[in-house]
Image 1 (spheres, rainbow, N blue to C red):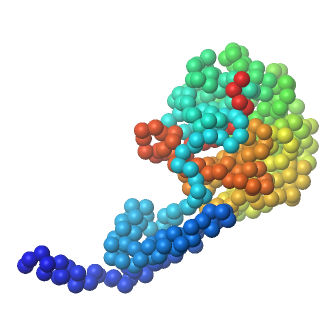
Image 2: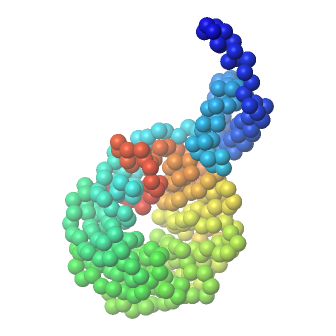
Image 3: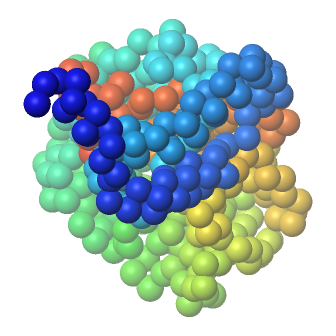
Length: 399
């Protein structure tokens, strides 16, 4: 048999269950199209002919035998139940610059990093958690058995050995650093001296009240919110009136509001707002599983990330009237962290499901800048495998 007859014989062979494969391929393409993220108007109307041609090509590929083979291979590699989350289509493949002044602190599987305003990235070392000092002069970092302070260039100023260290938090005064060590909350001076245990605590990051006083909020083993003057270990107030313990605490920039975020049963959550004296000012239950929350740097506006079913939302909430809410952005999959730019004009959201960061022009959403391939960007020369890079904070420009 020559090559020509062999070719004719192969073309005449009908693959097993060919029509069934075509129907399954069409369902995959149709589902992916239905779950796509909406594109802003300028991009949505750009080159419609090209977009239509691409859609036709995808459909043709799905219904052809080679297309079936490719789609089948992708489904085999990813798993038939895997949903591919499409992020913002016009996302840049690399972080070239920040849309506002300042520097972003990040932790990734490769360690702690600083991203400068011009997009330059500097690795500080093999650390798991990180926190800015006031003014961004130092960075408090931790790993499994050590707490340390380093400069933005990665030079180590001091280290402290402690077991199971995580969630460091530098006080606004610059003279104290709080952190969790096992089931205890501890405080050390900004120069690494005077380390002391404050109290037993749950695995919830402690937060300092803004101001020169060293007032620290944390969650005790019973699930109560405690505010302590750490210099003399005096408990100023305690609040606990719910069966569910807070999963996050956050102070407003003026220190007049303390937010406690609680995860409730049945896919619901609760926001509790206390004033500076410990009086409960607001309480609201709402649908969704909470992911992160952060007060704006200049008022009581609150950025909240929550997940409802297959989608996640960024919601801006009025911290003085929790029912005053605005959904700013919504997308398939999971959002991770949210932080405000130092000038309060931009929000930065981590979107692990799409492997993107979103820079959103505050609540009016006048502009969205997206960056993709975050895992690879913080893993030079690697594959970017492992947990999605975590946003630890957006601090002031260097002095």
